[in-house]
Amino acid sequence: MTTNSPTKNTARRWRIGGLLGIGVLVNYFDRISLSVAAPQLQHEFHLSAGDIGLLFSAFFWTYALLQIPTGMVLDRFGVTRVGRWGAFLWGVASTLTAFAGGFGGIFLARALLGVAEAPGFPVSSKATGYWFPRRERAMATAIFDAAAKFSNVLGVPLVALAVVHLGWRWGFGITAFLSLSYFVAFYFIYRDPSADRKLSKAEHDYIVQGGAAPEGVSQRSSMHLLGYLLKQRKIWGLSIGFAAYGYVFYLFLTWLPGYLVQSMHMSILKSASFAAVPWIFATLSDLLVGGWLIDHLIAKGYNETRVRKGVLLAGMCCGLAVLGATMTTDPYVAIVWITIALSGLAAAAPVGWSLPSLIAPQGGTGTVGGIMNFANNMMGAIAPIVTGYIVGATQSFSAAFLVAGIVLLIGVFAFVFLLGAIEPIPEPHGEKRLEDELLGNPSSGRS
Image (cartoon, rainbow, N blue to C red; front, side, top):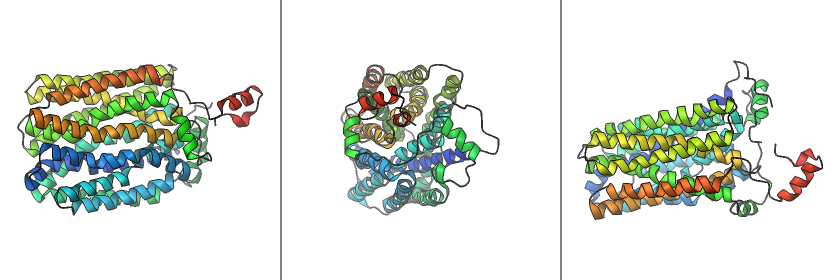
């Protein structure tokens, strides 16, 4: 395999990686806007903590339930077409949110946003597999995954300023404008490598020879592939483990501003500045540990499975620092514990998002990513509701954070005992493929 760096004029892949990162950044602006506006909505519409939990979850029910169908559609129709339609529809849905009125209207608008944004992460994961060799996959994945964390650094203060000075509708209006702007950018910039006229031959050869996922749509029956994957232990280990990560991530994504307002008695603007701190460190951890460090160690010759799983498990264990926040009423101490937890989870996240393109059988990256993200985002639906009802019943976040710690321990178990080595799942009809390889038939191997 060729590992020489491409010439200095061949950096198209990193521009595409940056585009995908901007898309996730805008995508998450849409998601966090409700968490910032929640105190105003609660006051204006006389909503309980349980009602707010239901609103937080509305997006995730449709988003999660569509992950597997979206992955199958993505494998069938490709990144370019699905990515364009997804970006357009989430811009429309964001606009409708700004005009919603009352609990029912907001719930429906957020549910529609979940439908529109369902292809977002699977598209980014599959596109990254096309555009980057294996030795750069961690950093490329960290770019778009870190954008999800950094969205809280930029988005929370931005939306908070709009909500405080202009009202909650303007908070949603800003995200709607950014969403439609991203659709225009994606439409004119993104192409798969083989169709991108601005990609040089030298860089294309470097990407392909470095182990990029082969392009093309799946020719298998989508349901047959889905059934085959659901029988694989690796898929269950990946899904359960990533679901545990998702539970804690989405707890903080939706409830952190409310936690600071309710438990630490802060104003909306002050809570926004405090909430940005753990997300800044999470962004740095995502890029430096989950991205650069992994690629650096693999390039040095360290075992790929040990490196990726080591970071994955260490990050999940750091997430248990969430339990520290149950033992303090000091906002500064609480933010330190939450920063440690989110930084650890952020380091683990790019590993999780790189796995579909690394373990999927050929043509199945979107489906594997869909299964994994379905489990992850079901926790996005469950965590806000569970947290809301626990807080409503106890008037405290301590029990909610304790539940999060238990969920993380289950995830660590799944990654250790079910995921196994980070290597491709055998193709369906693997026995025939193995026989062909033993007989020297090169056409049966993985590209």
